[in-house]
Each structure stands twice: as C-alpha cells, then as structure tokens.
Length: 500
Image (cartoon, rainbow, N blue to C red):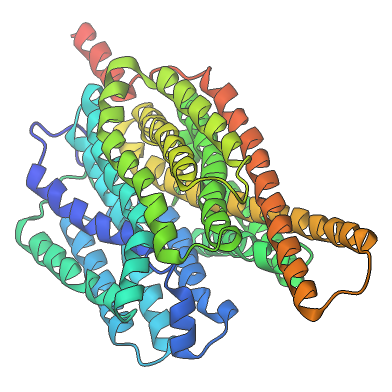
C-alpha cells in the first residue's frame, strides 16, 4: 500500500475542483422537493409515484455510500472522480431531456450512482491534505458545501418552478457538471493512498438489502403508516440485512466497510451523537415547512425564502466553527450547539396560527446556528481518532449513519405528527358537535372542518417538535463525554522518533 501520510502542501486547485463536484451532488439531494407537485401534474402521475424521484435517489445513495470505502481504497482519485462525475453528468442529461416519468426516474438513479462517491472523495482528500491541528478549519469549509448546498435547494427550486419549466432544475446543473468533469480530466491528481483489495460481492448484496430496506421502510412509514405490510416487511428485512452485513464484515480479512473504526471510543461516541442529532435535525427540517405551508398557507417559494436565512447562517458559520474546533476542541462547541438546538426546537413547539414571520425565521435561524456548531466538529473529531488508512471507512460509515438516522428521525416525527393530528381532530370534532346549538349551513360546516383540520395539524406539529426537543437532549448529555481526539498516526510517529 502507498504510504498513508498527510501531503506536504495541500492541493488547493484539486480541492476546488472536488468542491464543485460535491456541491452539485449535495444540491441535487433537495433540489426537487418543492418541485414535485408541479412535476406530478406535468407528467400525469400520482403523488406516490412522483415521490420516487426523491426516494429512489436516496435509496441508491444509501446503498452505494458504504461501498465508497472500497472504491476509494482500491481505485486512484483521478479516474474514480472522472468516472463518478461522468455518470452524474449522463444522469443529469437524461433527466433534462426525459419525455416521460420512467426516463426521468432512470436519470435520477444514474445521478445518485455518481453523486454517492463525490462527498467521500472530497472528505478523504481534505483529511489527507491537512494535519490534524488544521483539519477543523478545512472540514469547516467542507461543511459549507455539505450544509449550504442542500439548504438552498428548496428555495432555488421554488423560484425556478414559479418562473420556469421544471426541466431548468437539471439544465442549470448540466453545464456545471460538465465543467467539473473537464477540470477533473485536466487538473486532477492521485493523492489518496491505494491498495489492491477484492470486493466481497455478498457484502454488497447484504448492504443493498439492509440499508435499502431500512431507508425505504422508514421513508414510506410517514405516509403509509407503521402497520402497512410493505413498510413492516422492508424494515424487518432491512434490519436483518444490516446485522448480517456487520457480522460478515467482522469475519472478512478485507471488509467492504471495516468495523475496526468503532474500536475508537471517540469515533463511536461521535457516530452516536451525529446519528441522534441527524434524527432531530432532519425531522425538524421537514416539520418547519409543513407548518409554514400547510398550517399558515404560505406558498412554497415564500416558505423557501423563510428558510434561506438559516441556510446562509449555516454556510457562514461552518468555516468559523472549524477554526473554533481547532482552538477549543469538540466538547464546548457540541455542548453549546446542542443546548441552542434544544432550546430553539422547544420554541418551535410553541408556534401557533398567529406567530409572526420574524419569530418563525428567527427561531429557525437560531436552530441552524446550533446545528452548525455540532455537525462538522463532531464528525472531524471522530475521524481524527482513526489511523489514515481507515479514513475511507470512517467517512463511509459517517455518511451512511447520518443518512439512515435522518430517514428514521423523519419517519418517527412524521408518524408522531400524524397520530397526534388524527387524535386531536377527533377530539376537536366531538367538542364542536357538543357545543353546536342548532343546524349549520354547508358553508359553516366547511369552515368548521377547515378550522379543525388546521388546529389538529398544528397540534401534531407542536407535539412532534416537543418530541424532537427530548431527542436532542440525548446527544447533549453524551457531548459532555467528548475529548479532543489524538491521531494514531501522529502518536506512532512520536514513538518511532523516540525509539530512534
């Protein structure tokens, strides 16, 4: 294997090229969320069908991200990036010219194949390009792309759909993808260490069944309910698949995703904190638009604009947080960040039909400040505790855990919201019936139904935010046990120098 050590001088041009590729890949994750209703009408399909453009993309990414550790270890940086970017570009072209839903879905799936490798490549290049004491600032810049790109997706999507055809969503990404591909061919270098490892295909099958089943089961549970046979079956099969995948990795000499990373206490603790935080964060990012659009009746573009200050603040805070991490370590940032997140989430549970726009935007933005203090410092500290050769496995595990945890958190909070909404609607309907003094006109009945529906949904969202607050308290408690991770490679180097 090539020597796994930090390069002497960071390849800034190469990192910039990778940033462009990762940005369009991350942006693509949330770009269609607001546009789905418009696309549904234009393509003449049902809402459950159009949802596959988001669900399918997530499933392919979730299945392939665990394999990114093998790909980065086995193949050189330049050809791997060029291949991934070429696949992503082809998928974007297919989606842009798609005459029907089938071709559009195929384009999205192809996009996901390419994009699933972009983030892990960039993160691993960042880890090897900067020493441990400077990684916080470097990973803060990475966080700017990782956080801000998906955050601006809904706002950008809402504006485009309101003024242009939905195909522009893909047409604007296509030239950026082509430029990134050409720059990769022209300037990219091979900096990541490689070794010849064989791919265990059965592990790949187990990974696909396991993570694919869990992601699909939890992503559809919010709409179809936990008692739906398909939801139950896919979730149970998924859990069995993940357990079998982990057991097999422990037995393999060269695993697809090494479980050795979890022997590091700081990586394991960081993974748990990131997972629980992702559950609360992703669920909150779904509940806030639900309140703004469905309870308050604000159109998608305006609701996207209301979320935009939070996205901007996260983008600005990410590099700052990275520098603070280098100086003060992970514990103080995590404690402060999770405390802010918990308090802001609680205040979101107090939203009502009369809450001002300024209050909604302020609380949401403050919550984003809290989250920006948590995500990258926790992840970076965990990766810093690993030897360099395990970095691909650490980044793959982090991305997979966050995606699965985010899907689980969203499903749980939506299920809680739906259950609370239903029970609240029944209670409100009985109260209205008992308080009725005489027969009502059809118009009065329709008005009353609308009021009951609005109040019941509000009650469901408030209760879900309250549950999210308690979920956030779990990583807050765990964050007090965080310590600044020491690089095993640096410790080994010190020992060798003393021996000499």
